Length: 207
Image (cartoon, one colour):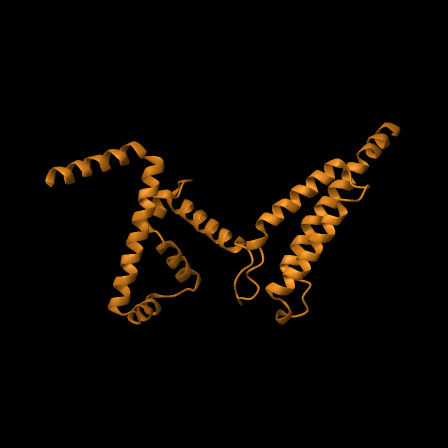
């Protein structure tokens, strides 16, 4: 028992240091989440920046404390440096209503699309599915979640003019073509470069 208690005592300072470092991350999340604001009107880029900068200054001052261990000081310096590098693009979303602070929801939605594609195809990799249908995957998923029937879909399509449809189709084709080129260059580079050389030779020979 004394041996176990002795091990715990030896780890106590390390655990306390880890808890203090964890508190930095939680404090940053609390400030950036805006949970401290009493109302949405009180939440803006300026107010968040003011509180966040004050907190960063307090952390920087704690580096001068003698109670901070060398390891904790090194971690805090890295934390402050990383935060300083991301700072210009970190607090920009609060003045725009409805703009999400993070892309977590987007990442979760993309993951749900991947899961559904894997269930349908039985394949772990969904590249072929994505290259085939492109952005239409998200449109179809949105209609399914809204439980829109054929009548609703037909009603929506009638509201789109022929010119708007041609512009959307052209934009979609260009995007899918760029995605396909990137995929071929990354995964079938030799074949892709060979096809470019043959097309160049045919073009040069024709001129």
